[in-house]
Length: 255
Ligand SMILES: [Zn+2]
Image (cartoon, rainbow, N blue to C red; front, side, top):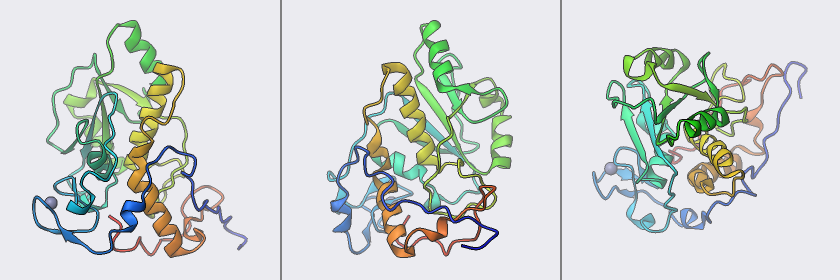
C-alpha cells in the first residue's frame, strides 16, 4: 500500500445478506443471442428494448415497486452503460426510462425528484409531508447524468417545482471508474434501490427486502468484475475518498 493512497478493499460479496434471487440462471448464459425485439446481439438483456434475452425470459425476478419510477437520462449519456436499464428490465411495470428533453408533466402533489439540491430534504421528511397532506407519493424521478448536466435538467420548468429529496449516505459498489466522484456517488440502480428502501422503511416502519431483487444484475456483475480484477483492488480510493486510478473497464460482456 503506497503512502499516498489507502486501498479500501471492497468485499467479494457485498450483497450476500440481501434477498436477491439466485443468479445461477445467469451463469448458464455463455454466448450472446439476438434480442427478441430488435435482433441485435445481446448477452443478458437488450438495453434498447429493455427486455431479457429469450433464454432468460421468465427466469429473472419480476419486481413490483410501490410507485412509478421515471429515470431521465441526459442525451449524451450512453444507453449501454447505464444501470438504469437494470431497473427497467427487472421492474417493467413500474419503471419508465426517458431521454431528455422527453420529460412528462408531473403533479407536484404526488411526485418527488430524487436529487441532492440545496432545498432537498430526507425521504422520511417527504413521506411525512405527503402523509400529512393525505396524498401518497405516486412517482419518483431520477436523473441519469453528470452533475453539470443534472443542474441544467433541474432548472427545466417541468421539474423545477417538484419536491427534491436526498438519500442517506450509502457507499457505492459500482465498478466503473467515475473521476472525482465521492464514494457516496451511487450508480443509478443503486440510487433507485436505496430510495425505495428508505421509502418503505418510512412507510412501513421496517424494510424487509421487498425490492432487493432490483440489484439482481448489479450483484451478479459486481461479483463477475470482482473475480476478473482480483480482490477488488481497482476500487481503491484516496484518503480524501476519490477514485485513485482509472479502471481497465469491466469485461466487455458486462452491460
Ligand atoms: Zn433489442
